[in-house]
Image (cartoon, rainbow, N blue to C red; front, side, top):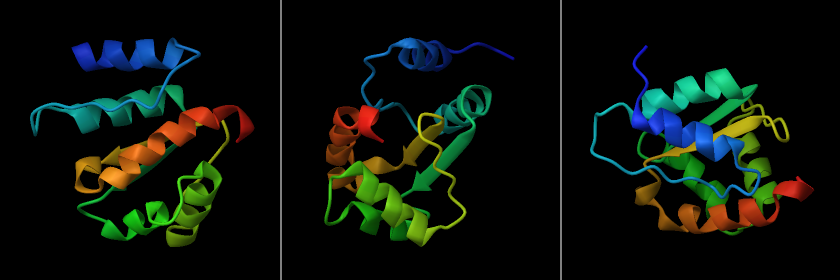
Length: 116
């Protein structure tokens, strides 16, 4: 498989102990989502993937809170099949630009990573 620049960015991000939530921007249809899915499969036990265009019901989890535990609980209520394993789950939010409040909430995930 061809190694792409985004693959190196993801690997470097994962290896940084002080990592912040990562936002990957780029042109449409260039393989960002595929790269993230492959990265998650290789590096995490669980991938929770949200797409705010395809599944706008996930937006409600970010509506009234920035607390990561509350967001995770709300997402689990919307989709009980989500498997959140502390420290072993990659939360991937696709089309996050459709709901900027979710992007703002990401900073609280960083601040609370060690308490989850």
